[in-house]
Length: 256
Ligand code: IP8
Image (cartoon, rainbow, N blue to C red; front, side):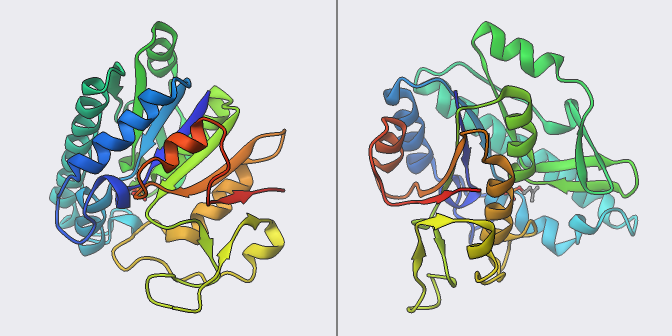
């Protein structure tokens, strides 16, 4: 099984509040379906989560009652994106169920803890893809927290032991600097703990969960035991399909 994270930057327009990129999401779901490979999908929140979460500092936990309506709203919006994604998967022939992470996981001081995995395991067993997503999740110490799709990827990889892990983003891979703003940025084809030290830690402006460096750190934690972790650009038509078919594509591979 291949565990895939569809980043918020490929399924939403991150600069426009709550804007689903239906055509790109649909193309990516079709590439996944066409590959014929068993997969499981996690997705990011994009403009359905980060803007409001940042405005109300939800990533720092409950500090002020003023944040409570915003936490409820971001959870609602994340669920809405979950429904849009499962609708798109089903249109492409993949039976899928949106599973709010708070229904089976809890956070403990920012760490994601498995509370009850029976529902997601049962869905997977009968052939319905459980689709989890970045969301607001209750936190035992902080009241609530922001659970990122990348944290979910690590937990889902632990639970379902995929052969390969793929992060689909809007950049060709990990760069030495932000390729959108720095013309000297160079693509790093293989990342190791050593190369990560030389990488800029600047993250996207509206991203409350840390950007590409955090992604690479979680990718490094997930590789090993012969498992490959790859970051690819999903905005290039056919690239995800080619990767899933085992072809060589432009990407960054994490290796321990
Ligand atoms: O887009 C963030 O998840 P990500 C979740 O995977 C929220 O970083 C609600 C901002």
